[in-house]
Image 1 (cartoon, rainbow, N blue to C red):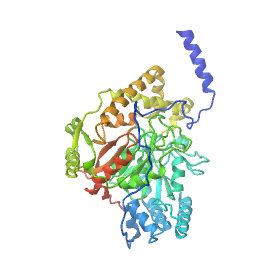
Image 2 (image 1 turned 90 degrees about the vertical axis):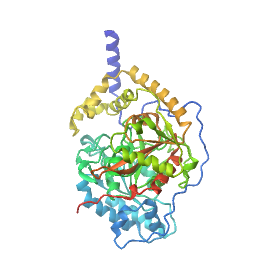
Image 3 (image 1 turned 45 degrees about the vertical axis):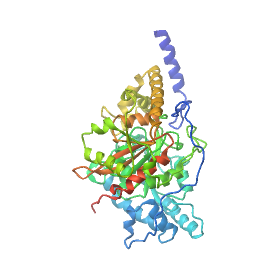
Length: 499
């Protein structure tokens, strides 16, 4: 074998001479769609919940925890200006951002410019929709033209791009106001970044979890009206759980990742982190769909109807997982009781039987390729986390994953996709504990998830529950989550921050 291996090594060295920035994808695409599956192609006008008559409070800072629809109604009716909201959120970011360690860069000049433009447009009768003039934050792996995009890591902390990420462009087109680039665990793992450890607003002794650490923390603390996060394996679900907010991980292939840091080309997904499911629908509606750059994105409709009755839906639940819950079981069981009280007939289901955990090296292999230059240059030594279970070691050990095993794992992934299609044929949505095998499995298959608060621990920190939808079924998924939230009040509770 040695002569052949020497030839292959020479080929590797030849290829390494070609520059491969993180933005270059592989020449193959992951397809989450099972054999024979067809989708509705009819696009209907978007609708969300009406906020009704919203009054402006005497203390403007109370608006920090209003929903997008409430803030939008105040701006649309010109009871409040975008500039007022933007200044209020900027002041809160300056006051609480350092305590929570959730902000990488304040985009104050850009934000005030966008807010003033929004106010002028609205005064002239050019109202763009419910995000017009609404301040938000973006996870700092999304490129913003002329503003540092650090990926949370020392080697990239001075990195500048000359173009906005596709999601940032879409939000600007919707009239949203970018007030901050928010923290992420370095290179999208955990809550430790080059400037510290992002905190949980409910308990400052805790990290906010990750990797969308700052997006969840800032939304929970009322420092932004909403934020954009990303998920590869739990990076929206985990910090949303810890910080008590509502997050949407969309179907793989729903939202363009152009201009976003690549970690795993076949698993990365971008989604909103908000106060409630209806807010997630509003943001998702603005950012989904093809952009002509990310070739993995499908052109399929999002026909959200917020008042869909649960009695008209087939809702499953993972019976074995619910039966075996050890922590906060009362909160999880109460979710099932609430859904039944709303007319849902819950159908017990079981996940396909595959060694899902053994497939996780798919992510490791792709991440090691995405940051191959970092590893070979030795600059991975600059990352803050240098423990055994952190990126530097994972990137190095992933070089020992044979290409044959990576391909075999993806062939098994194909089988999982087919089995999940059979499972989802019987339900529209299913309920699952937020952590466990389901989290990795559905990230591998590309299914959408809504994670939302469902109570509190004995220590007073939030817990969560997850709903999983059909591929490209975000409309029904968010409608089911909205129904649960209309019957409960966990999503309207917020932390009290020390002055």
